[in-house]
Length: 192
Image (cartoon, rainbow, N blue to C red; front, side, top):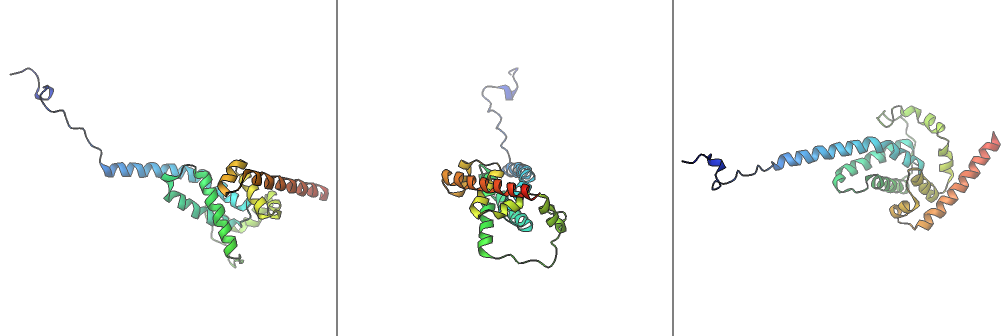
């Protein structure tokens, strides 16, 4: 007999590698996806609402569109390469569809509080604190849209790519919006 253990023998078959359980792999992938998306959601939801407000949406409509957009982002999370740009594009398009399809009607009741609108009755108070909103609302839609994208941190080239415009068109609208902003601020200073 040999001093070697049967498992150590060169003639014995090697131990079969342990194959990971496919169900465990799917659960691990789902957990990782959930963690990544949750971090993105916490970081991006409020700026997305602000982005929509800067484009002219009422606070409640902006919150609804942002939430719907985030739901769609979660469903496609593993396919998104630039999630921040994707949610801005999708939300912006949803706002345009909403504005084109219906007219807003005033609600009789104050909406229920949510995480995005802790005190829905304080919307007017919040809007009054944000001096840029009257300026943004005074701009034509394309200038308002380009300025909102710029305020969200996108470059004219990025904006052009996402909106299907030329970079020159974006820059021209941005220049017009900036001139309008300067005139608006000058008029406000003269009023005071």
